[in-house]
Image (cartoon, rainbow, N blue to C red; front, side, top):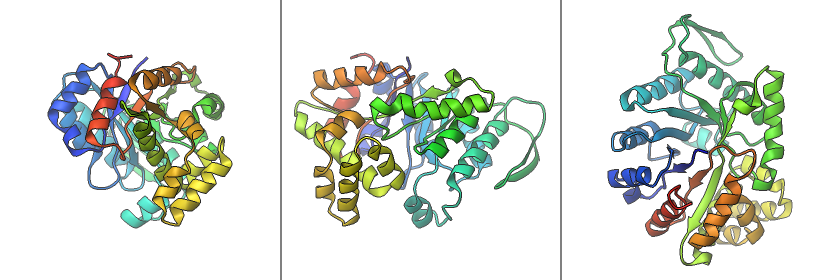
Length: 327
């Protein structure tokens, strides 16, 4: 089983020495996200040039701020300049990020995911034929593919987006889907894959595993609570995903967040939510929890995700204690 880590959002942690340490700890893939202030492909190029052979992945870049052609060329360039396997993780993000940050219309996100993935795969293929595509959102013609072989993963939450994942994507990046419901949620992906004549077993499942590890169990759980409160409060898709298992608690968290009471939102995240949606505690506790997630039949590559609420010490400890070398 592969084992990934999403680079923590702590400035000193992304220095070259940290990237090298991550590789020495046995991680197979380093992923990085982006929202505002950092750019995923530049960060991954930085990682690639300070490590030897760790894989690189975006988790995630949104499909509204770059065209499919730009996404394809960015992934192909990263792969060629680092000589690494690159996984392109994409998602629809949220109306807040797309409209208020990028100034774009949050229009038909599921269809945009579908066509973006199809086009990126066509643009990065090794086929001899030039790319022509006549979609509902994109109409392109007569450009050669880049022969980059970049697997495309989708961060899909709702059933419509999971169906699109099954129809066209190489991997699924679930986030805030309760661990006990991953297999059930993946069946939507699998059914769509079969409809499209694809083998569901060839779709890799790489769930985000929000994680915090330290000697102070409560501090670790508080970091995960803050992570969950942020996502449940700021994205309706995330709230709905969590509400599959925790309908009343998810609504309470979201209400508090919308009212601007971040502390109340964090406090409304229950211990049961932390256990179903993350990993937190002492090294021994957290490793046992992480092993349970990794052992789920659906999971191919669990990704350690350190909450933004963690300080540098907690972030570094988490990455160390949940590394393949420690598990």
